[in-house]
Picture (spheres, helix red, strand yellow):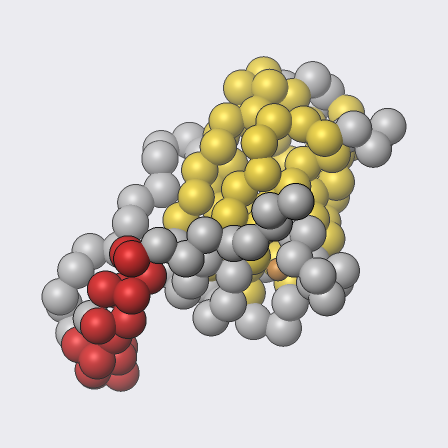
Length: 131
Ligand SMILES: [Cu+2]
């Protein structure tokens, strides 16, 4: 059974560019605009300390677009489960700082749980209340 994470050549070339990125990081340069969050999306931030920026989020029933923003330095995921513990939609993943991953979820009114399923990240859990 293959269960290796893909580490394509792109990862290597990303490393090659790292010196520049790191240099740009501390200086507050104006090199590149941050990836954008779609208008009307619900923003959920992964922040330092293995948590989300809020313990509870709210949304209106229907198509809910979640923009998952990584404000931390490591990989995080975002999984949505309904009150019956059933997975809803597709898992989002943000690999590095400033990554944004967006997904649209069809959510009926109710209470959902969002969490990060990276091993050891059990503290990354929040409630999503859909009305
Ligand atoms: Cu995480």
